[in-house]
Length: 134
Image 1: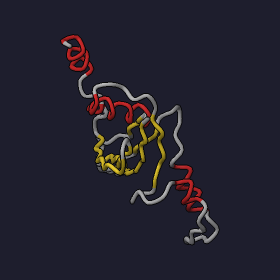
Image 2 (image 1 turned 135 degrees about the vertical axis):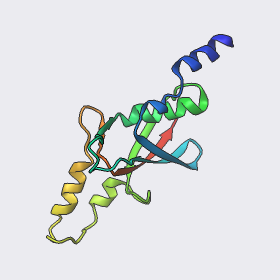
Image 3 (image 1 turned 90 degrees about the vertical axis):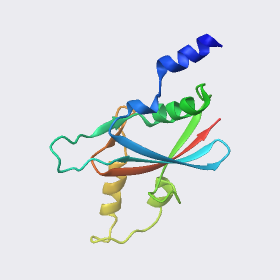
């Protein structure tokens, strides 16, 4: 028992290492969370930076901080800002914009792609995810 406590203290708060980023967690069901992640820095501030976050690692750290054990598996789905539909669902809708042909939406979807397993959170960037743990 002492060793397990020691290990947990050694690791500390896994989520805390994502500095400069704030998050809000909303339970939506058993083992299901809606998580809103924000880079609240001002993009015009010279000290601001783009944070690169591994969302799967973030979801696992969040589970570990709460339960003291790592999750068996986590399914992650990026949602629209209000958390009412997935990004994939959103892409099926015909959105009218200035150009009227979907160029704006395609640009937004391209911004949501991640590189090297990490997602970019530019200053003033907000994203919403659904985490389902098993």
